[in-house]
Length: 452
Image (cartoon, rainbow, N blue to C red; front, side, top):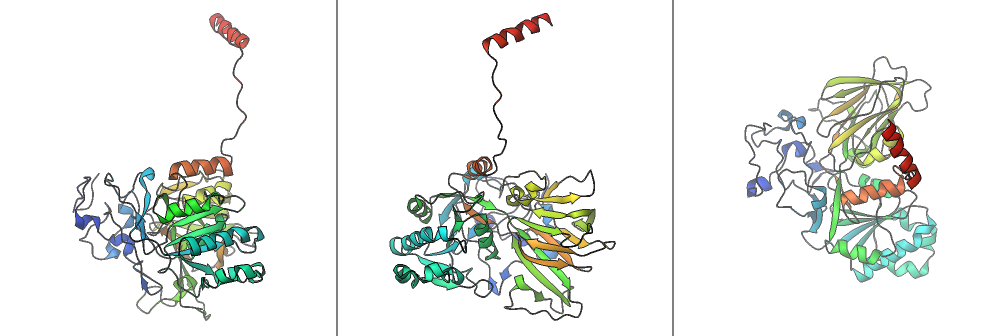
């Protein structure tokens, strides 16, 4: 395999320059989010990157067979323990271990809203973090507005020690060392949406309905949380999608509540998208484009690296990560892919075609989805089930793999946890065992074989 003109020597020991190389492909337009520099440089050099290419416009992400190299630091203090046996920047899943540059001091606790069964676990966890572990605990303001918590006088002293924030108004990305989720898979998706850049490590407790992404049981949470604080844990890097939605303004004034790019920022005069509304999202599971309330088929064009590959005529199309392959995509007939596989899945929803099968494309490609000129109606798009909005003629959705994965802490290791979730949550390949032959049946089979 040929690489760029400056070849990388594939040995166990990389030079200091190579180990601290900052991938131009990953950091071309993601160096600053929300007006703050983003933490997290890639510790290992991407085989696809060349220092000679100063401009990211000259660099094609698809030159890498493995897609963009993810950052290996998560939050202000966590990072992946470097493996000296690593040759490429994609590690053996079993070797991905969490370590801390400095002891963690702050934790974000995310609790499923309006669930009375979680009140007691929430109080026990927060009390342990504050009193036993001396952590600074961040909680969303609306969690504390729950009447059951507000009316609990015994919880008052603990509640006063919390640091609170509001979604879409307060930026806490530089203040959180790690995250603990109490609830179902939705709490992990919500945690991902709060961090548009580097994501701190996430420890998810299974207190919801399905729990495919939440491997920890709450019974012995003290021991498990203590191990994570000490840095004794395996992690799995769940790739996310970087999505850009560009909309025609059509003479309408767009209100930007807080200037956050996620909510929509007008393009500058030097931008080719001048006069348009540009929104960016980080998506953990999937981007869903569907026909919405219309009775007509959706009709959208799908481009891959600038080339039209197909037109989707049906109820819609799902673009998902490997993590999302076990969600909506699985229900639509797609294969289930392990999160360590660098890929993007394209799955049609009820296509009006007998030959339209789901496909998997490399993680480094850039997909662009637009409304087909022949479309009779508009389509709707949602991101991990949120921020649903209408897509009209002239609008576009650009999707590629993000450089900022979500580091999810494992109970055992990435492989064992995934197969455990397949078996326990989705009952993968569950079937009544075929009975073995009795002695008499074996003799009959042998006699028939001899006669044959």
